[in-house]
Structures are given as C-alpha cells and as structure tokens.
Length: 111
Length: 110
Picture (spheres, rainbow over the protein chains, first blue to last red):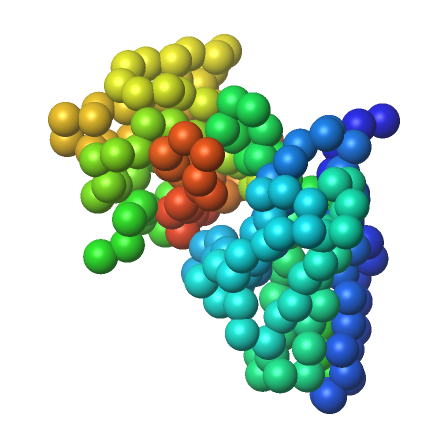
C-alpha cells in the first residue's frame, strides 16, 4: 500500500507542551511539505524540504521545527512557542509531474 | 494581493446541475494548474492537473486555464451529492511549492 501516512490522526496538547507529528512516505519523492489549515484560511506553508538534511521555512514557520534525516520521513514539532496551534496539519510530497500529494492529516487540539 | 484568489462560497446547487468553480492568479510565470477536492476532515486529493493553457476533461470534470486572463476554472457536469466538498485551486512554476486558493465549499442537494 503506497502513499503518505500521518500519525496520529488526532492529537491533544496541553499548554506549554511540545508535540511531534509524524509524516512518512513510500513514494520515493524528494520534496516534502507541511501545511496548516484553519477554517477560511486555506493552506498555509509551514516548512518544506527538497532533499535530505535540508529544509526551508515557509510563510508561518514561527513556533514550529522540522527535521529531514531520511528521505521517507519529515516530522513536524509544534513547540510551546506556537501560541495558537489548534489546526488541521497536512503533510505533502512533490512528485516529478510538479503535483503535490497529501496525507490524511492530523488534527491538533490544545486543551 | 494573494497570488491565487478563490471565492470561498459556499455554493449550493441541486443534483444534476452544472457547477462552475473559478480562480484568478497574478503570477504570469505559473505554468502548472491543479484542482484538489477535499472532503471534511480529510486530506486534499488531486482531481485535475493542467499544464499551460487549454482544457482537460476527465469524466464529468473539465479543467480550463486561460493564461491571457489568468483565469482557472473547473466545471462539474451532472453534479452528484458525492461531489459535496471543498475544492482548492493551485498553481506553481516548475520545481516550486504550490500556491493554493482558499477553497470553495460546494454542496449538492438531492
């Protein structure tokens, strides 16, 4: 079964906690992306990585961190510095045809 | 001005209607244009992909790009209740991240 997996599906965070969202892909795509989606806001780019051990900030990187140690994995950490983290988080990969493919998403809620 | 603009709707139509969804963009360097469909609480799925200007048809769906007016359209014929979702347009240049519109919410009633 190929594609992009994200875990967990639902995540609850207490104030002041760091949490890590997982994104794994077996599509052999080099580029991976993290987006945040809020109602009425569309998709906003947090971080992206075009190759292993390299990543760049997107439009709303403050309060987030990433790593890209393996081609298949691009985890996102939501730190306590992110003041309003409740949102739907989407991971995507970028294929050879310049299209992006999305995972099923993780819904993060701050308690 | 956002690079890709999309009317958020909501848009409500009866079953069997023809639906027209539209976006405009400002960056003349965009070459690739996409439409994604997103059901509630799910990740977006790629629906249509078009390179440069022209039309592309896939079943009940037709994607249209007019680069002269910087206009992107998606037409849905014989709309079904299962088409009820949010539709996102997107565009990019080769090798760059997609720029998304905010999405249009469509509801098709039976």
